[in-house]
Amino acid sequence: MQITKHLYSSSLSLLTDLYQLTMAYGYWKSGRGEQEAVFNLFFRRSPFKGGYAIACGLEYILDYLQNFHLDSSDIAYLASLKGNDGRPLFEADFLDYLSQMQFTCTIDAIPEGTVVFPHEPLLRVRGPIIQCQLIETPLLNIINFQTLIATKAARVVWASRGESVLEFGLRRAQGIDGGLAASRAAYVGGCDATSNVLAGKLFGIPVRGTHAHSWVMSFESELEAFETYAEILPNNCIFLVDTYDTIEGVKNAVKVGQKLREKGYKLAGIRLDSGDLAYLSIQARKILDEAGFRDAVIVASNDLDEEIIESLKNQDAKISVWGVGTKLVTAYDQPALGGVYKISAIRRKDGSWDYKMKLSEQSIKISTPGLQQVKRFEKNGEFVGDMIFDEENFTEKETYTMIDPADSTRFKTFTNYETSDNLLIRVFENGKVVYQSPDLEEIRRRVKEQLAKFHAGIKRFVNPHSYPVGLEENLWQLKHELIKKLRKKG
Image (tube, rainbow, N blue to C red; front, side, top):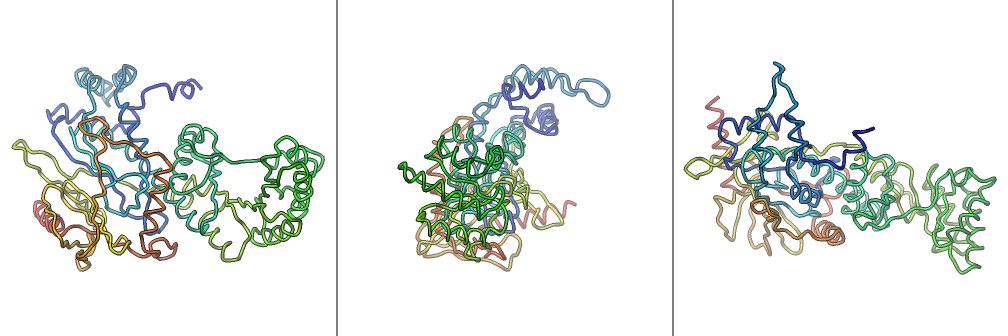
């Protein structure tokens, strides 16, 4: 219990894997700790077998890195670690170096709320290799999870066809941090509100909620439960009607709604949490409409996700608000994004860049070298393709050709486009924040505006359209020359 009590009052700079510290020690010990390097954070496959992802988590990263330092308790803990021989794992001079280290990296990032695709760098980190290495794990932890949840939320919102979606997942979330981060990311992805009151306080997200089955069960009758609730909170009456018999529950809600109307209030709606949601919502809508409550909403919950919502819509369910919990905040059908963080260049002593890449027998796992940037092309009001290029060896021109990194027979030429924007923007300059984070409402608008400019095919759930993303032809050539060189070296 003591650990839990003090967890959030201590430094979070040791939120990392031990091998990051052992590598950092190795860089320092070999005199290479300050050597400049470039790392890129990206994912290899779109989540949920979909056609895109929503970048999310940058605000958390800005907050984390602004406070990145190892305090005296961190140093004391590291000093206590032992190697296999029982001797200290790290020598005192290295720990002293860490205690005085100031964060000095330069970071470029794709803004939150941007639609992104496999292989595109979401973050590009440039600075002393020891620092780039030490922040790998927290960067992946933050971006992987929040991008995953924002993407899931966007899919759920797309399935709802413009109807309101509420995030109800706190009780099933993976811990306190998971619950808070998921509520924020779900709001970014398009959810309209959350049941998470702390998320409402911290992030300014609207909060929603009325009562649970336990409220109804604590009274002698369902009608009494509804009547008591209406007396106490007449301005917040959405009744959960499926505790005993759903149709009778709707009728009881109508009875209480009529009393509310007489007092100048209104029945806001009912909630269905079990049973055949399509059938029950149709029957409930008839009862409500016949009683004159045409404005009362029907909220549905019960382990919903985008595919279930799409099915219910296709069945003409009369549901106007969707409460989505477990399958959203846990990314139930794909619990990890699979983002990675790879070194792509390191500075030589003469000041030139030595490009680096990871080889693999799986082509999808062969990384891309260089100081990568992403250019997005727009034509006739629609995004038509993204091109990854090397900023160090790039010339702006009117026509570009890009090649699919996994299939050299697939390429695309961009010409006569209306705009071409670089997606990565500077957020840290030599360890100092140079980026003004937009508020959550602006990030949410960005998601909607971005998705509206993509072909509808990338948003479908089954066999989505493959949006063109590739390497600029010079970078593609450089990559393949480096592959041959490394293969030859064995």
